[in-house]
Length: 297
Ligand code: GDP
Ligand code: MG
Image 1 (tube, protein in one colour):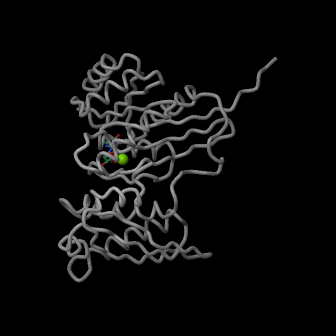
Image 2 (cartoon, helix red, strand yellow):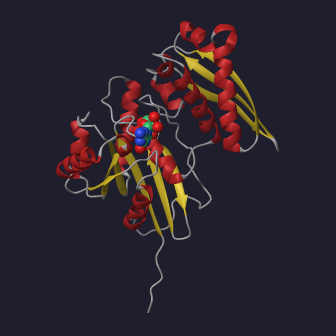
Image 3 (cartoon, helix red, strand yellow):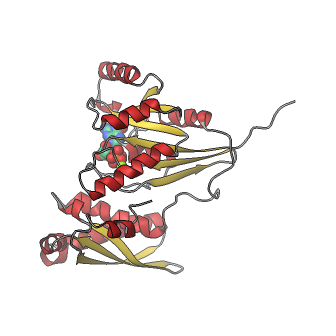
């Protein structure tokens, strides 16, 4: 008698140092641009879920901020996300990049080694390295993490991505779906508005500006063909407000118009985006504010 295959479902948590390509990988897996991607570390501040559904399985990918040691409140809150990524994973993806040797948080590394859930070590950005380097570094990670499977990938060029995806489906535990099958992410529409504005600020400003801002969508009104959005960019100091707005408002205009274009693609509707800049001293250190901005789970 042929047994019917049982439904599979599970959480796949992607962790690793900042900038190794975690968000790029998740977007390649999920097929949507859910996480913002830039060259700067700490682009991903929150955990973001990306869900892949078929009739026979549901994979819940979770993208996390990079591993860093707590230096101030924001980083401590981020470390908590990483910790929770370990606690609720069915499969763990530990992403490293070619050329990476130094582990930035040994305690965390030991935790990965001790876990009894399946661990895939993805050696990313192999498009940038010689085959010799890739072989050497794969051997290094195999020795460091004997329990894990080490797979060389290029998230950017989708090399081996389908292979990793198939392996995840194999390793996925049996179980009913965690989310409705038409759901793609756990984040609200406002969250994606905030993230897309923050991405443009990361792209166009230097030094401390990107790390001093937070974005809050105050109003999101959707009608048949149009979405009206009002968002506030919080900065820590008056001087930052000036830099952000720029000469004759040009800086802020650029952020607004680029974010609007992305959001029109994302939502498939015309967007009317109104942006304001406010000074909100020490948002980074203020725990209540962090909670309000969604950094605590
Ligand atoms: P995260 O901080 O780990 O989420 O890293 P991101 O996904 O934001 O990627 C950081 C940078 O690495 C971006 O500029 C990506 O385009 C780049 N990147 C990601 N994957 C690859 C890859 O496979 N090859 C190369 N050459 N660059 C990559
Ligand atoms: Mg990221």
